[in-house]
Length: 81
Ligand SMILES: [Zn+2]
Image 1 (cartoon, rainbow, N blue to C red):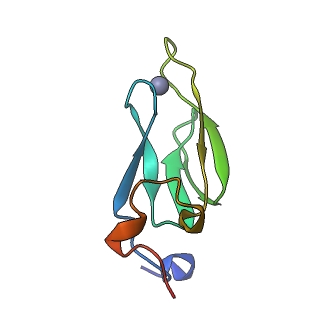
Image 2: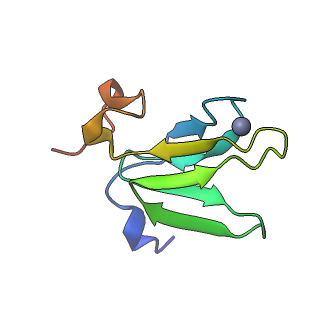
Protein backbone atom coordinates (compact mmCIF):
# COMPACT_ATOMS: atom_id res chain seq x y z
CA UNK A 1 0.00 0.00 0.00
CA UNK A 2 0.99 3.62 -0.20
CA UNK A 3 1.88 3.35 -3.85
CA UNK A 4 0.55 6.74 -4.70
CA UNK A 5 2.23 6.62 -8.08
CA UNK A 6 0.05 3.71 -9.09
CA UNK A 7 -3.30 5.32 -8.57
CA UNK A 8 -3.90 6.15 -12.19
CA UNK A 9 -4.55 2.65 -13.41
CA UNK A 10 -4.00 -0.97 -12.70
CA UNK A 11 -1.05 -2.86 -14.04
CA UNK A 12 -3.10 -5.43 -15.80
CA UNK A 13 -1.42 -5.82 -19.15
CA UNK A 14 1.54 -8.09 -19.65
CA UNK A 15 4.12 -6.68 -22.00
CA UNK A 16 6.06 -9.38 -23.75
CA UNK A 17 9.05 -9.37 -26.04
CA UNK A 18 7.83 -9.00 -29.59
CA UNK A 19 10.29 -11.63 -30.71
CA UNK A 20 10.43 -14.41 -28.13
CA UNK A 21 7.32 -13.50 -26.11
CA UNK A 22 9.24 -13.49 -22.88
CA UNK A 23 7.48 -11.43 -20.25
CA UNK A 24 9.22 -8.09 -19.82
CA UNK A 25 6.90 -6.39 -17.39
CA UNK A 26 3.39 -5.24 -16.72
CA UNK A 27 1.90 -1.96 -17.78
CA UNK A 28 -1.15 0.14 -17.15
CA UNK A 29 -0.81 2.00 -20.40
CA UNK A 30 1.08 4.87 -18.82
CA UNK A 31 3.77 3.24 -16.74
CA UNK A 32 5.69 0.02 -16.88
CA UNK A 33 6.71 -2.08 -13.93
CA UNK A 34 9.49 -4.53 -14.61
CA UNK A 35 12.37 -6.30 -12.96
CA UNK A 36 15.83 -5.36 -14.07
CA UNK A 37 18.91 -7.54 -14.32
CA UNK A 38 19.69 -6.96 -10.66
CA UNK A 39 16.29 -8.20 -9.65
CA UNK A 40 15.02 -4.79 -8.62
CA UNK A 41 11.48 -3.82 -9.41
CA UNK A 42 11.43 -0.64 -11.40
CA UNK A 43 8.56 1.62 -12.27
CA UNK A 44 9.11 3.74 -15.33
CA UNK A 45 6.95 6.09 -17.28
CA UNK A 46 6.21 5.34 -20.90
CA UNK A 47 7.54 5.44 -23.51
CA UNK A 48 10.30 3.04 -22.58
CA UNK A 49 12.81 0.95 -24.48
CA UNK A 50 13.93 -2.32 -22.97
CA UNK A 51 16.30 -4.90 -24.35
CA UNK A 52 14.95 -8.41 -23.97
CA UNK A 53 16.63 -10.26 -21.13
CA UNK A 54 16.64 -13.48 -23.08
CA UNK A 55 20.35 -13.82 -23.94
CA UNK A 56 19.45 -15.61 -27.14
CA UNK A 57 17.06 -12.87 -28.18
CA UNK A 58 18.24 -9.40 -27.12
CA UNK A 59 15.48 -7.81 -29.13
CA UNK A 60 14.94 -4.13 -28.49
CA UNK A 61 11.35 -3.60 -27.44
CA UNK A 62 9.74 -0.20 -27.36
CA UNK A 63 6.58 0.45 -25.42
CA UNK A 64 4.79 3.71 -26.03
CA UNK A 65 2.07 5.41 -24.14
CA UNK A 66 -1.12 3.61 -25.08
CA UNK A 67 -2.41 6.80 -26.63
CA UNK A 68 -0.03 5.96 -29.43
CA UNK A 69 -1.61 2.57 -29.83
CA UNK A 70 1.45 0.38 -29.65
CA UNK A 71 0.59 -1.81 -26.72
CA UNK A 72 -2.11 -3.86 -28.35
CA UNK A 73 -4.38 -3.38 -25.40
CA UNK A 74 -5.66 0.11 -25.93
CA UNK A 75 -9.18 -1.14 -26.38
CA UNK A 76 -9.26 -2.73 -22.95
CA UNK A 77 -9.97 0.41 -21.03
CA UNK A 78 -6.43 1.07 -19.89
CA UNK A 79 -6.62 4.73 -20.75
CA UNK A 80 -7.83 7.35 -18.39
CA UNK A 81 -9.80 10.11 -20.07
ZN1 LIG B 1 13.01 -11.69 -26.52
